[in-house]
Length: 222
Image 1 (cartoon, rainbow, N blue to C red):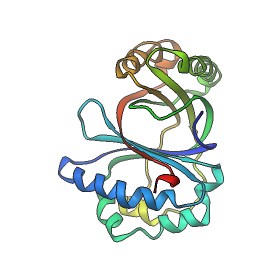
Image 2: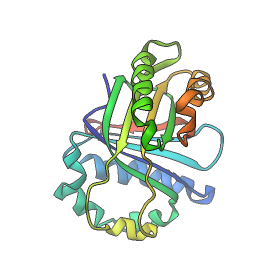
Image 3: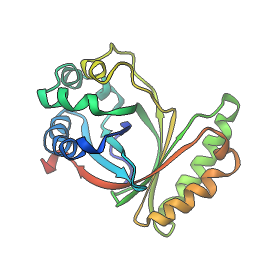
């Protein structure tokens, strides 16, 4: 099964160790349930850096792109809970991308995840898209891997929300996002340092990160 739905929110940020325990408590027991009760939110997952730093990756899989501007979601963004108001200023170096799912092969939720943020130049777009489609379609059958996905940021036109203001203003965004799931972290590391670092894929400003699953849930789990 591929990613759930045709859109996603993909986010990266750092969290100071002193706030990590409370953050995970808030995020698991208040914030995830709040988001996953919004119509169109199909699954949420949180991942921690596998190299021991303070980074994390969070993704919400959405039914359709229109969920990003739906009235229930915008209402929550503009009315954060007191606990959210306390925790969101601790999100450092936020990258928040509102995306369409361009390609999705394989599926499931595994213990390890590779994320790659790409920013192709205009003359690279067709070449890189072709390379990624060819690569990702083959990944689900490789040893240690289960799925590969390509997201493209398409930020909807919308006013700045209260949550963004709490975090300090406009969030940074990625451009293209490659996600690869696997049950073998070494297979992800080999992919990151191998084919994803070679040819035109390696010349498109890629930022790579490997993460371990902390928590995943769907509305039925809550």
